[in-house]
Image (cartoon, rainbow, N blue to C red; front, side):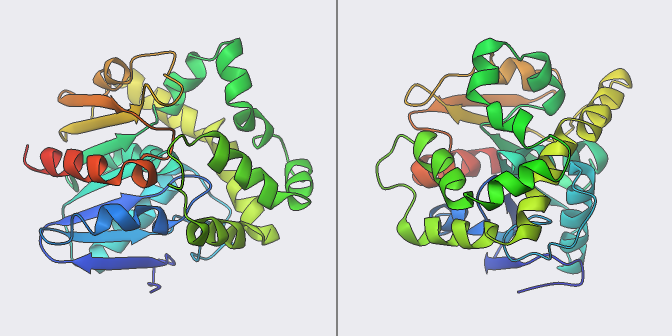
Length: 277
């Protein structure tokens, strides 16, 4: 389903609305097993973010502010003035920006295995730089990253799906094929690189401006991350997010980076708990 705000999305269930935002290198289908655990009590909306999946790719602004505005417009088109938002990876950054830019619209906020870009860049050390090398590579000026990725995009995607997951079989063959297919188009590769370029430039500027103005997230927050099955982060996610919000709870899950696919039951249970707060 595609809307006037140029996002492909799926809607399931009925009840209070919850928006689920995917990360890289995924699409909305990463939430399949989470959705089935939420639809009995909530309306679940899963868009493909701007430039990803089946959403239109001819875009130039891949800042999280622009992506957040897309989600807000989609919510308005569906008749939702206020909604909960759950974001994994890049989707978590979009969810953060939604909560900061449009506090009246976001009732609850959950972020999975991500911290704000400003805090992430300020935390970079040698170990993190090696582990997160793609942040540096994909942020390089065009067209070199696009040209290199165009020659081995399936292998690039598999590097993350396999290297960043610890639960065998969590990334299904159907999902893997869908992620490959979505990113094989040159315009999709360019859009993803533009997302990461924004994450190293304008997204930092937006975070810094909010920090200096002491803008805070009003919604109650849930923070989940990979631990101990994956690589523990070199920082305390709850402590970092508590700098941005007044009501933060969270814990690690025994899995890799792809929490919605590796631990869908635990993610759904945690989100359900958040929505009761």
